Image (cartoon, rainbow, N blue to C red; front, side, top):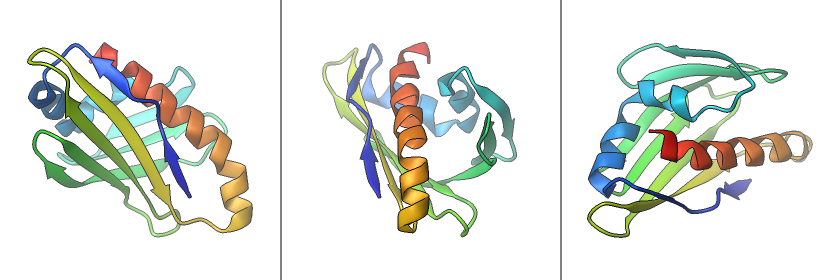
Length: 130
């Protein structure tokens, strides 16, 4: 299952945005209002939980400065990745798009598609808060 967020323009250089997203603590600022839990559990990992959803542990998998950051699920039960693709717009602004890629059975995909689509859209729209 592949989902994409809308592309959002942020008033930060691509390197500055990359540096902010490289620090997992900053993901708390991107979370939606209905977050039930957010906990940093290491330099490159955090756990978050949304109301009504199981807690998910994300781990930094790959960083390609200043254009790409890949986060992946730390559990094999729900295998997925969340990729932040950063494009330079100008010296002071950049555009970011989030791509979600997960391997779910048809039933699970049907259940999570709506909530996850809304979730990555919220993450992208909150990039301006960084």
